[in-house]
Amino acid sequence: MARMKFTSRAVVLPLAALYFLVPVGASIWFSVNEVEGISFDAYTQGLGTEGLTTSLMLSVRLGLATIVCGLLLMVPTLVAVALYLPGLRRTVEILCMMPLVVPPIALVAGVTTVLSWEQDLADTPFYMTFRMLRDESFPLVLVLVYTVMSLPFLYRSLDAGLRSVDLRTLVEAARSLGASRLQTLWQVIVPNLRTAVVGGAVLSLAMVLGEYTVASVLSYRPFSVWMVEIKDSEAQLSVAAAMLSLLITWGLLLLLTTLAGGRRRRTPRTPLDSGGEDGQDRESRDNRKKTVS
Amino acid sequence: MPDQTALPAPATGSVPVAGAAAPVPPAPDVRDGGTAPRRRGGRRHRWPVVVPFFAFLAVCFGLPAGTMVYGAFTVLDPESGASRLSTENVSGSLSGAYATGLTGSVELSFVTALLATVIGTLIAQAVVTSPRPALRGIVVSASGVLANFSGAPLAFAFIATLGTTGTVTQLFHLDRTGFSLYSFTGLVLAYLYFMVPLMVVTVQPALDGLRSQWQEAAASCGATRGQYWRHVGIPVLTPSLLGGAVLMFGTAFASHATAAVMVGSSQPLITIQIANALNGNVLVGQENLALAMSLNMVVIALLVMAVQIPLQRRSARWLG
Image (cartoon, rainbow over all chains, first blue to last red):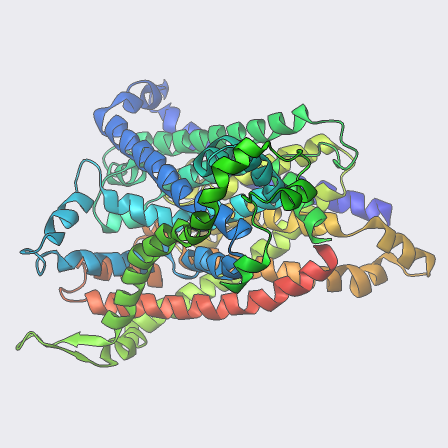
């Protein structure tokens, strides 16, 4: 029987490796392969083009704004619910998971309709709000929609983080030492939730950087929309940009695992710690297991 | 606010409570004197903390979603400009080409969810039982990255690999075999690229939760490996696997960018049809039809998600 297990692994993993590596390898080859040999023009010159930098910068700014917006909403809410309003816990959880039920394309269908009220509201003060929301250089409406879309990641990550710290004791200690509410939140709770905060933020950022549906329907031009726009004129550049975005995602998640690992290494000798197998997922799950059982 | 009064107030100034719960000795009386007057005010000010969250959701999620539902059941009369309630949009969105799109999406999601669940579980099991921890680390982190590699970049990677001028197509002359990336099969291949890693990440904790003692206990009772899986392993994993499959279905059902960039409108998919209707590519004045189609999507997603909730409770009992 042990032999059978061995062979099934020997078949599954190489096949999987083949399936997952070939598209990446083939794409890189596609982006450097020219008639007269190998050329890295798509990377050296193409990646410096103006369209790329402006669209990538827009994506990054949108991503950072989404993170700030999402964390400002979620951290105080979840802390307050965990401490004072346990009756709301289920409601908040369901509300945060709602964006999973409403696909981005359905959400943006609703958003376009709401935005189309602009003409009807032309005489009211709301008109200026709409103009601000749709500002070409920094469309706030995208930040709002992306924040909604990032709620599930943020909730999961922060919830796991909150379960793993003894929030009540921390708050009591901080408050009895004279810290204000804001100080407690900012200097005691947030540092203790660092892994969870970074985890949620990185996942949101990765989501925003790759987002295409909402931005293209609302006709803005962040990174992924730009990539699609140039696909007919500069196929190699678009594939190179796709590889760049894979590299960015990889870098972001690597950063996340490094930060999560760094935190664990600082507290290595607790007997309850199940030992460093891997990154944050395992850690938060272990913590949850502890609180459940 | 009954539950609030039932709890010991964390920011309390009353020394015995704070001293009993906190490892830190109670603060000097000077501090208490400073915080005590704020205590009652603090109680009153707990609700406002969550108000921004609910207000944000109401405006940024409730408003569009409500508009979607309302618009789906409203028809704008072109002559008088007045709108009236009607089910025309919904019935229109469930007939003809749009019905094909809906079934096409459901079919694609079902096939990919099934494949991703099976393949993802196999890979995760191969990794979990592997004696080498390095392999596990690599697969888990690679899965994390690849699960996030979807949308337009993924479509480009596949076009560059298996498209008409793709590297692999030209290398193996796949076009002669009749293979086309711009088909149902091609979409399945591309979707699996981010769904399988997602499944690996999702199901791996459940597989870790299968305790080796159970297998030993089964073996010492004389069960073969096959019997162990049939009577212990699979039943315990079923809720997690089904939950994973539901997540896969939802992910595939909602994804739009990959298909939009790869096949455009050549494959009937509801997400692409909604985007086309919203952009006015089909006919002007199709917005409400798009809203009705969106509503159909939400209804299907809700039905599928509803399956998952009781399942999660069950799996939490054994693997939580």
